[in-house]
Image: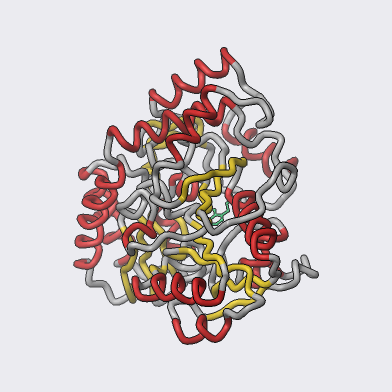
Length: 394
Ligand SMILES: *Cc1c(COP(=O)(O)O)cnc(C)c1O
């Protein structure tokens, strides 16, 4: 099949829920993606933060191959060597989060955390933040703020409210004896790359403790080294009760997880389950991926490369740039106008970047991106942002 045929098939026969790019990608290596003609693109999206290890990491590939030849599927009622290995490893990542529930995606980990919060506290209300993104299924969609995602799907799950992010006062007013949980991103991704302040996350912990509510942090995008620590909340010395993760957990293989603290109660057999959750194939991939994160010290790579990138970006003094912000290699460039034409211009110059809302360019490169690639990224960004481009709709 040639690229034109591939694009046509996907455009005509896919459900229609994605705006397809006119760019067929067939291969990846490190921070690079390649089209059907072998043309190289610098991946600054990582599949929305999935490919932290880079594409086609040989250790992950080998683990998947070996496990596929051994055992792919096994329901969680039967213990398994690879699953036990993963469970042991993942529950050692955050002090105080000593249990884990395994599932298959980000939204599923949020669904599980919300259910665990209700069954644990016997309360029904969930307080989330404005601009929050937690996923697209009904529970997580109810915690998601943007009406673009919610409209047309009502009624959503009752009991959810949204308060301004990074505002301690409104959070303090919103949480009461009926609140099961507060759910927050430590740095909002889809919502525009907005980091929380340390004071805000610390206050959220204190408010939840005072009112007997649980604190859920959603680290699906910010987790696994992305911000310069294994999890972003570790910058702030706070332990949540439930931590949701997915995206880069298994090196690109679909997998989600909820890390669970001591305050979470009533998790007994039958309370929740997933057919694919904890399957040996994903577990083997995740064990390999976590091993690579450790061996290659990916959190540290994100920290130093993020600082390097941020420093260079802050020196681009162009009138169109309103602000550059982020944590580690999770970076947002807020423009004074819509970003869609700039993202297209970057793609024409073989750099794949993301938007975060209408006016923010989001950069989520693989953490293995080289300094030469970062320099190239900044050069191309500088060139593209210097040109006034007509505003078009995303
Ligand atoms: C991507 C994301 C989700 C949803 O994950 P899916 O795997 O797409 O369901 C939820 N929360 C955050 C913060 C995310 O970035």
